[in-house]
Amino acid sequence: MGFLDNFNNNVAVFSASEVASPKTVAVSDKDNSQNYNKVSRDKLENVYLTDPQSFNTINKSKQLIMQAGYEMRAEKKGVQSKYDEFFDNIGNIGMQMNLSQLFSYIYHDKFLYGCAYVERIYDTTGNTILDLKMIDPKLMDFARDKNGIIVVDRNQNPVGYTMDVGSRVKDKGDKIPTYGLSGDVMLEGTQIFFLSFRIAYFRMFSYGNRFESVGIIEPAIKDIDRKHKIETATVNSIYNTAAYPIIAYVGDNQRAASQSLMNSTLDAMQNLNYSRYMVFQHPTKLETLEVKHSEQVDNTLRYFRANQSAASGMALGFSIGTGEAINRSTLSTQQRMLDISLDSEARNTAEEFNVQILDVLYRVNGYASKAKVIWGDVAAEDKSDKVRRLLDSVNAGVISPEEARTYILKSEDILENKESFIKHNKTLNTNKEKKLNDKNTDESKEYDEDESKEEDN
Image 1 (cartoon, rainbow, N blue to C red):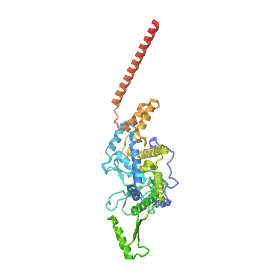
Image 2: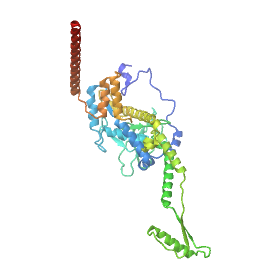
Image 3: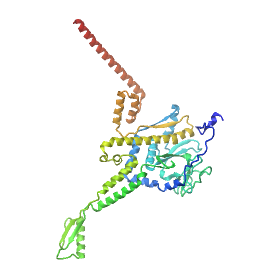
Image 4: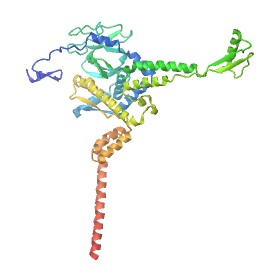
């Protein structure tokens, strides 16, 4: 075996023999039972659109991650232009998105559905990737057999994905392969099939066989449902009892009220909506019935909102946007935990992007070197506070000004001008040297004057 034979599909293999198929299985009929417990993605989207806390939590998480910024860096500088050119020209298919929007959509889908799908769009020959396109997760699923089990190949990777396109599109999709599979792919209704190489699949919190994953809404879906029911019941109760009910006592000890008399009195009372004055023929006493709402409602709603906040990883005060919900003594700790959570998700997604998009571009499009996305530090703290800490570190000699300069430029959205920066530093150094020389000159004059006075004495 020659040295070049150790490379297969751009992956080095130096083992003495070929890797055998795993003895364990990636999927089984046990996985199918889990699907019945999962929440439909249609319902998750409806929660996002109708639940203010979910809406705010997802958007705030996405915004905090995106404000940190990112950098795409090729291993060889000469290849950087290839990647820049590719991502400058994406979005021709779909909603004319750019790279920042692509990342924003990926984070949104991961937080909401637990996964995101991006189609790698090839040219007509299938040899070059030309574009990227977001896919609605509500339409996507793994290719499954007749028992609902994910179909995998001999390497225990999913053979592909299905998309429910409805009755309008029938000529899309790939031909279903029939070799080396764990089962036969079965399409249901209006589904079409895609081979796995077309789809980049991003996961948030994976579990079980690691194919499935959840976002930050699904773990709290029962509490969200209960919260909505209590809120609806409470609002209806308040609406019905906003004005205390009025009770009329008709008649007295001498004369009992007839049914017709009570009906006429009720008609007169109903006119209270339109008139402030009324007259009754017979003795009538009016009273209001005070209605008290259950004190458990607020505590129960707070409990459900806290559970929803726990599932998202965002403190309750941040997720509902009310300062009184935050314990001031623990605010800094909550903020720190939020930073850690979002920073971890940002780095995980960047690594997924490197594997699912950039590494594939390197292999398929034949770029001379790999590239990777480096995400900035995610922090919910004020930028001015961080700048002050960086400057203090510079003055203390802990870090260099150049190390702090990168963050300050990004945080203030300032375009770097290296020539101007170098010129500015030269001017500063010149001024410092001049001040130092002037100081030394003044000290020397003072010393000469003191020496002269001593000689005179």
